[in-house]
Length: 304
Image (tube, rainbow, N blue to C red):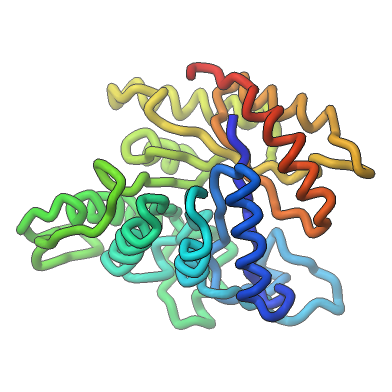
């Protein structure tokens, strides 16, 4: 099993933010974290968002650094670690531009980028309205996501033909993509519902599911994913499985055995990678790097 690192990129970062992010990225690269991910938002109100503080003294709006700019900045300061958003909602940018952005990052990072995509969460409505971005109903967002996935694959093919979708149209997809990974940058899809799981089975190289909801929920989601793979005649093992792990791994300077047992249970379900949040305490980061990562890397993943 692998451990990835999710790094917050809000306006609460210590300043200068560039120095802070450089240090985190270099430490994560050297420590052996498999992936570094950042959230892709622009500006969120706490009352509209499940994961922001609702403290009455909290700022009215939490602003985020632009995610793909941050990943490009980090790419220049690292050599090994994979890079992704978790994830880019397809309503946030015009799709062909987003694909070109991921293509460029993969080329400039020497083949370390994922194209992380999602259908945009329901809590994003306020953010979209304030940024002047359309926010269609959930069902349409999922349908749009499938078209974006189809568009990405056609753009990466370099074929000279139009893309004719119900929501998006391109006059031609001719071109010479820059990416280095083959057959293209891996597609990472995050989501929960049955329609999203079907898209994962059809298009994803990696999936992010679970979001800390527990082993039973993860087991059920993975069984649904497996079922869709069987219907589509796609090997379930072709898809890498990841999930966010929100609980602390270290308590009072000691590795939490219950947390390690939970990670082993995830590995037994076939989860390839867990994403943890960056710990603010340097001693905790050091303990994760020197103790937790070696233990987790020795956990056998079911089906691998």
